[in-house]
Amino acid sequence: MDHETELHNHRHWATMGGRNYNPAAAVYGIVICSAVLAVDAGLGAPTFSTVESILGALLIYWLAEAYAHLITSPPEHGGARAWLLDARQTLGHQASLVLTPLWLVAVVLLARLAGASASTADTWALVVGIVLLGASGARGAIRAGRHGSAVVAVALLGASFGVAAIGLKTLIHTVH
Image 1: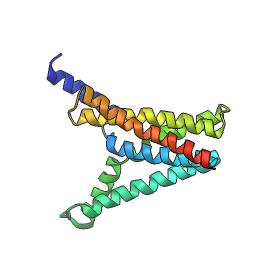
Image 2: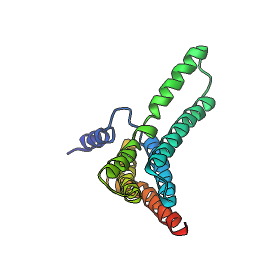
Image 3: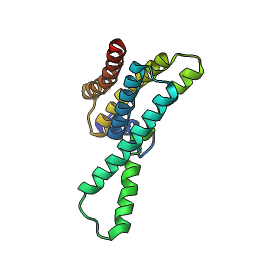
Image 4: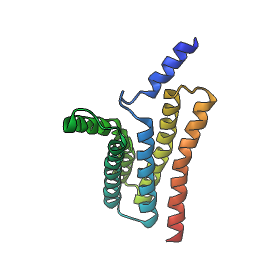
């Protein structure tokens, strides 16, 4: 396989999950979700409260991320209409921040429905978070034109954030 074809295949894999998939936003969202899961699980919070906390944190961060982009962008010609269009595009571009971590929320809810304890359900979601962080890191690396061991290194570094969240859960649970 020539380099051009290999690069096309890597980039195709990096965009799976939708052409608007944003690996950077996905990483932020998964890290936020994992941190909330770790803290709430460590403190023994009820599942419903944890889900509320996750959704609230993601929504606030998503809106703040779009706001930060808008206030640091050069002024658009076209006034309020252009500004609103830019805001809508920014929110869409950052949607992976909210959508990707919903997989972790789904894992928590499905595990609880299957009879798992809140702590076990949270742990399963954190494990899925590790996988998603690694995959998002790999997708971002591929989009940036990296390949081979560089993609693996970036994926492992991304996954390490999820491992840190499990460490945080354990630390909080041990202290409380």
